[in-house]
Image: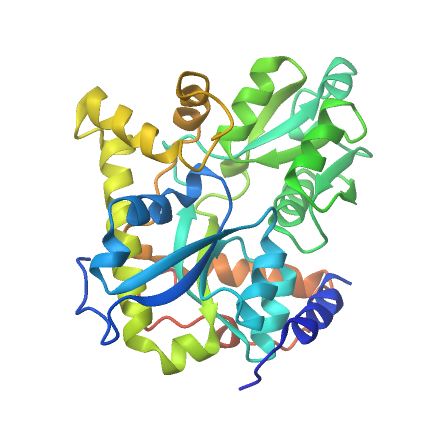
Length: 339
């Protein structure tokens, strides 16, 4: 197993871009750092923090926020972060191949009947006739970096439609939003809690659903360092169990609505501590509700979808062609589908 410092992890990343609680950990209050994005899709983590499920599992959690997937992969590899939820990226795959990272669970999947990620068009492109994804031939598509989930979603759609697009790396989600609103790029794909408010502003338009092209897509995964997966198995089980309790609470409130309007309102208030925290609760509520997607119960992982993503990275020359799936994933911690 290779142990990475930050510089080594960054160098590898640059190359790539070209359940109830288990028994508490022995060390009560063991400090761990969790990586997250300020998306509703990370609500399992937020709920587990706010309702002290991690604390009950003997874990003292610190959250570290990022603006894109690949920097989180670097942070896991270098030991700055212990566990994270994010999309599979080319950088993550390459670091897994070096023995630094393992995907240990699933976090968010596209699901039939549950509103999911959207394809968006700029107002200029929409007015020029781009009203469906298949009309994006010759147009530009925003992404954070090559090998990001945005690159994957756009490419799979273009392949299905038989069209060609140019992909523009803009590093951060905020930069992509700005470029789309000003017409510097023509299209993008993103989770509904961002897509719907943008469309509501009139600056961009929803033109399609990602699920039409990628049904059962494992959008985000749970991952950790190979060291944690191998040498800190009880801690990893404790983390996953606490996280899964947060997921179950979120799904009950926002999908099953088992607590009625009051239960949903309580959950939205909790999430607001992390998502749209710069807005008032009243202003933030529509965006948080719009972002409701079912999270993977028990952090179950769709192996078939992860395999498809790995094969796409390889077909695009973003990672080495001979990386086996078991270099990327460890299926010993959670239930799997499509294996």
